[in-house]
Length: 388
Image (cartoon, rainbow, N blue to C red; front, side):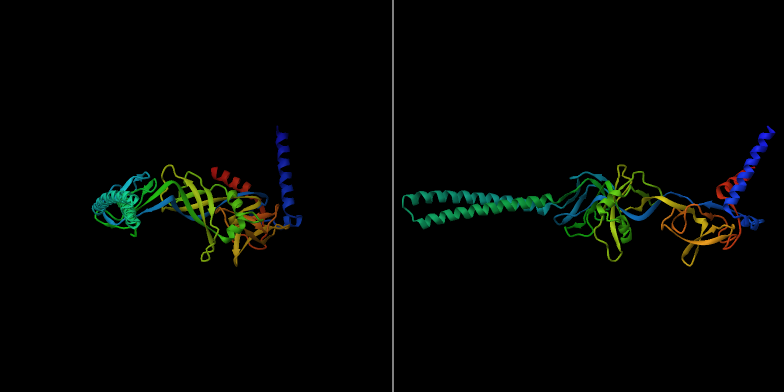
């Protein structure tokens, strides 16, 4: 048993020596006598999952302003703000007195016109018989026929006026143009309503599905269509997006980017984008705000902790361990978005390099000689020490 323990210890010591030798040169090992133990990582290619966020405004699939087609005083409001209504449901009633009077007058005009047609018809028939017997002239017969045609035209005009009067009367009952939720109602009973009124009587929002509107910069769109990809195909390739609500919570239903405006606003340099979300619960309301969260997956990239970097004159650097365990600064560029803990390195590092992740800019500076320690192993040792 004792022999096995000794063999195991020998293997561990040999492995430690091999690691030390591979990480620093023999000269470096002599230099690092008394050098501080500093946590490092060895860079390697892997994958990263990041997110982009964009401010968004929520709107119902249809937001219809409700305005009357005729003018009149509001006599009754049949709904309340926030109420769910069906298409064709009565919302408001306007004063109908003058419009009902117009209908009655138009009906009377139709009766008069019909009587005139009947009289003209009798006269025309009589004149025709007399003309056939050569008792009256063709001129007199034609006058009778013209009078009949005129009477029929007046009847048609009266009937059209009646249709118009009935239509105006029906417009005094304002109904919902679509199913949805009633918005603000600024005018109540006694207020004068008209087709040109501003604001509208109310707005009916169809919130069964909602649109989240946000903006992409011209650079974002160029990245999407890189390599000659069409915008339509780029839209299809966008993964499902999430909606972060104003309280910070994530809406349970994922959405899909539906359209990107074909015009870039010259003042903002961005294009409007629309994402569609199902809203079966009715949680989302037109006019709400939030953030669109777009996932970004990257393969074959180097990921390092943010604490391993420092900035100098708008440039970002890391400390790389050299042959003599001496660290030197290396400039790097990183992807413009991050998860708040790590950076995706786009240039400046290759796989297999040792990067300092502890004491950057404080205990470790340019030219510092260190004793590199694997960051994961050091963290495990510290955890064990804390537990003891």
